[in-house]
Length: 378
Ligand code: NAD
Image (cartoon, rainbow, N blue to C red; front, side, top):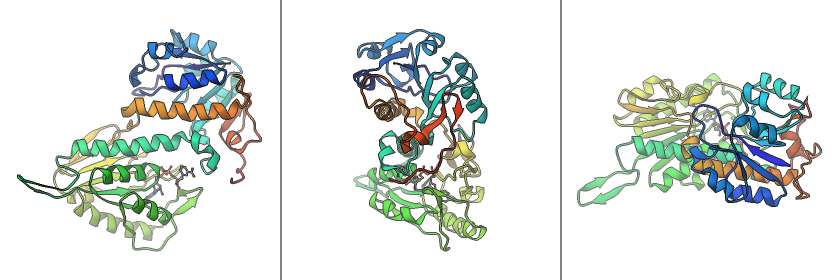
């Protein structure tokens, strides 16, 4: 079968769904690979680098979509792209079915089979190699620290030089999921003093193992809302958490916020008052900007200076490292292709008896199969 990779059309999206080193592996699995001309340009993979490993370069989205049995994409398709899709074709991309019912209906009308990489059951250990949410969150967490370092006017590490003594930067990280943990490791690696908080107490050991200090909220409440994700906390907890965050805001130089609750707006953790209390030259990177922000003063997509504090609200952190994020995403999709094509003959079998495949198959031959039944844990 032919796997086709179109150029991403979403504004500002620089990633591409496959990269030359992965094309080679897909061909070894028996697939032919077609790439739309220019698809890798923004991630620094030019047409020749794909051609060199055996991909066919196709000019124009219409021809690419028409030719592809299976389309690998990063962003879910827009209505025009669904229009180009071949009837009965297969699509692998981010979809977010809960948020995009109309797209789901359009894909079903195309009699498509759709594998939504965001719907992979992440708790299955077998699924980890395909977990693009984790690989993308890790990159975003790293990049958030780099953005913070860029906006911050001082060293991260403490130094004693002939020109004087420099104290290490103090960083507070709100939310220690995948992105937060990556940020903790990166900031600690640069020599900063790192503190972190999460409503899920179970992450405390992970924070410490990466070189951070876990700061507890002085209020007993279990923060897990199921499946390893967070829940909305009680008003009493939130009040105690605000008091602790207000104290941290006065002490630290940089705050990186990553807190998300599935299906809910991002919790507001950093108030305008807290921003005001930070030292001049401090930095906030709000990784939840796209979901409404963890900081009251964040402007999504923008860098703003409020009360002498630089607030970075970029919503494209992974696209700012497009070569890296494309490579990891492409590898996640290759691992999925291996699961779909165990026979290594370029033919796929979407096996609905396999928990991992069942979980991410959101449309099967035109039938909406989302949400899936709860998987058996493995
Ligand atoms: P996420 O992006 O949904 O949320 C980020 C973090 O914010 C979470 O740790 C969450 O607890 C925290 N948070 C939410 N509200 C908060 C608040 N009010 N104050 C402070 N922190 C708050 O989470 P994620 O990074 O996608 O990870 C979610 C879970 O998935 C984790 O348990 C992670 O270990 C798990 N996971 C498991 C696997 C696996 O088993 N293979 C892989 C990836 C992720």
